[in-house]
Image (cartoon, rainbow, N blue to C red; front, top):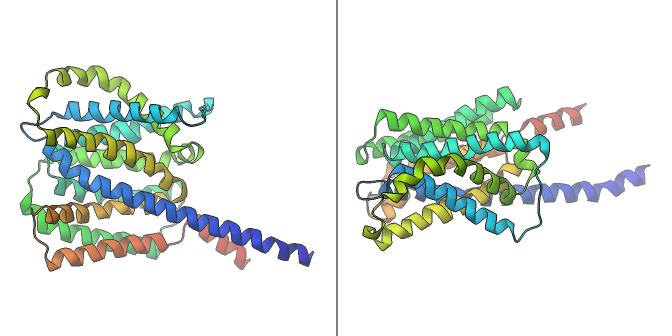
Length: 323
């Protein structure tokens, strides 16, 4: 019996190593997606400014473009049928994760500034922590709450310093808040579906379903756009929004969602103000100040604390071991 127990140690250790490796891959995928989203805000704002495209065209491009790319990619992969019991979840998941998030985001960002939008996104971790505690029974530990508070402090410092560089509207800000809430609900309510299917299978259905109501509503606006007058730069920006901000980013997100807790994922929202300011600095739009560096330190410290906090599974495991 003792020898049998000792023989299990390598198996347990191997599982632990694989779990840690999966989490590392999840963080890498989320970091890349967050970088892409950090660029997406300013680029989308430029695209949606006067002389560019209208929100309806932005939504149509993202949804139909991503749907086509995901379905083409799926042709080179083994087929993965959707369980009958999951079809309603896939339908609702597409409404919260894509239509309610990116559709409302496009309208909101056209009416407010990327800086304002990034500030609103920082409410995500706090709301996620509360909803995860209610719906998923995730514990609110002192480390987790402290991490959320530290990250929020950094984000508020950063955005407060940059408020004078952008203007927004109450309606636009509220729409961005609705987009953030929709994504949070998607993270929490549809985790079982996210865990069950591959990213390509999940997203090809999400974007196809979301495209169905979008095409008749947004196609007339696209037909009226003066496409021949757009510059090469504008077409490249459209390509970035469709290929990187939608296809690549949404292929990476489920990878992180499978192995990371919703609270940890939402904490990456705090990186948005840092990225918006950093990209503005690189492009020569804004300068780099001490306050911005300090704010960035707060943000990443908050992400670290939440990442290191114990999940419900960790606490149950500790209780079991103590017994």
